[in-house]
Length: 87
Image (cartoon, rainbow, N blue to C red; front, top):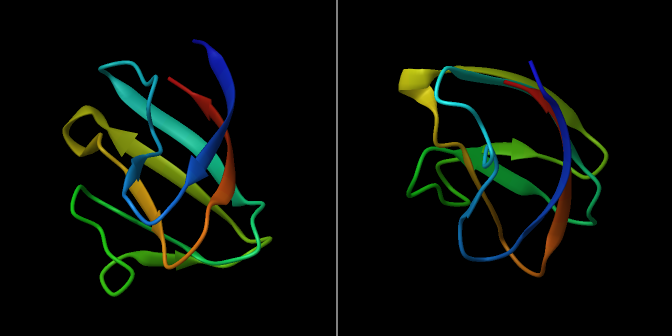
């Protein structure tokens, strides 16, 4: 099992958040270190369809192989997400 700590910059175009994951699963903590909300969801996520992660907030995520493909998008600017994950 590897532990991955990654900073991901999320802008107005969707960005994959669970990148670098193994084919089996992805478990992690995602923290929004930016100044604006980030919206999380599957490919095609938008600011109206995604889970809103406000600045300073964190969410724990556990994805099976069938669920891999978690993306983020922001309404404006570039926001920094920090992830700490195992696969």
